[in-house]
Amino acid sequence: MVSLADIQKAVEIVEHLTIRTPQRPSPNLSARLGVNVELKLEMQQHSGSFKTRGAFNQMLALGEAALDKGVVAVSGGNFARAVGYCSGALGLDAVVCMPENAPQASIDATRDYGAAVELLPDAVAAFARAEEWVTQGRVSLHPFDNAEQVAGNGIVALEIMEDCPGITDIIVSIGGGGLIAGIISAIKSAMPAVRVWGVEPELAPTMQRSLAAGELVDITPASLTKTLGAPFVSQTAFELCRQHLEDLILVSDLDLIRAQQTFIEYEGIAPELAAASTLAAAEKIKSRLAPACCLVLLICGCNDSPDDVARFANMLNAQSDQS
Image 1 (tube, rainbow, N blue to C red):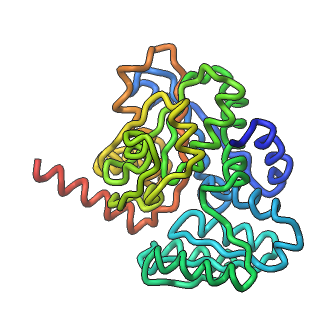
Image 2: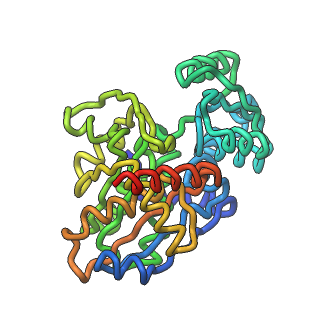
Image 3: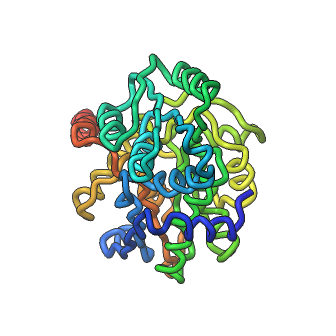
């Protein structure tokens, strides 16, 4: 498990390479939800998501000798972008194996940041190709099941607690579990009374299925939000959620799109569906929050392309027309 000391050490390692992202109150959402709401805008991090903090921490923990061999990663989205950005900033030789159905914007951004991209038919083939690179000497990076990645993610929680000492509740999206593992590790060490809520898409309930089964299970994700589409969660995240999660909320893809449109129309930001999930979950639990609560919505990324955002809005409009 990652300790508070591990997270504080990660701050020292990556703070000069990353952004201390802003946090601000939302009067509109506070009125809408009936509690004090603050937004942690981690979407404004380098590469457009929280993944950059952990990617830097993971790379720098390897040491010069390992980094000189080059790194390899598998991702269809935000971790690919983060590895591209971090390797470019550090001057490293990086290869990212991506499935052919990955968003073109993520493929392009990963290349533009400086990593070499290899496109494979699917995720299984991408992982197999990455293993080939490891046998040839490259060092493997993991998008969520890695202690340094989790510690880097935990820095987000340290900033939240500094900026909002009155926090009572936080909602965090769950993909492979690296983000929520970092958030729980930091918050439950420093402010154990704070309630941590998780959210997953109904069509990608990886953690929910595992918690229900009492063990890790694999699923086939089918949600529109690919960044919450991990087929499994890490053992560390599973154990932390089982011990500390207040509740896990499932939301539909239409709920995600509605929340995304709310942010665009009323908050002037365009988070990706994964990040908008925190508002979708807040709508479902608002009756469980006392008026004096201070709720933080962690807005973890912004890497849905404009074309995707428009397509999602059209889907929502089509659904409304049918109602």
